[in-house]
Length: 155
Picture 1 (cartoon, rainbow, N blue to C red):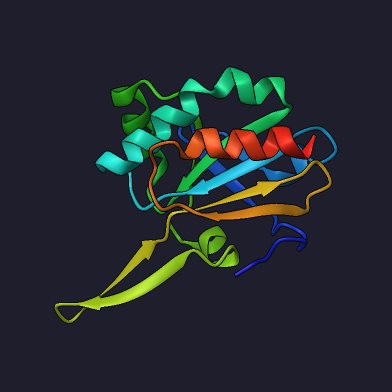
Picture 2: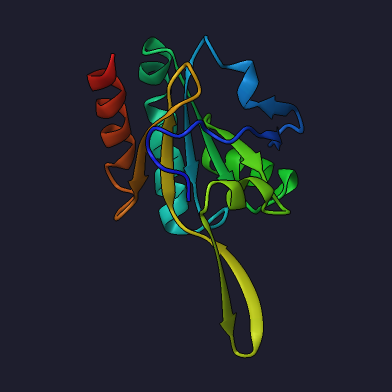
């Protein structure tokens, strides 16, 4: 897994509207929050998406953009976004390439079947592309506020 102080791995992923998003588009302009979550629609993922969406204006005031990333595809993300009124940008990583770069993928064997899941981790990347914080998410409730506090503290 990448660590605080490392250069953040780049990414080029499609969002829920099938627009391509690249980390390099924000370098020198915005801080980037990447929160990785297991799957669209689970109660904890809904809570996390709503909380980040509710604080979107506050993140914008601190020159920060937030992206949720999972293994789900763009269609699943669009449905998830629309069903729950999310405004946070969701990025699709169905092949798990970016999830693997960030070290959030966990392969498990359950009932004789190999399953890939994503650990709930959040990465705060500064405007220069350096990882400032890596947070393991114990509970989605209150997590967005915790991330915002760290961004404010680092200004």
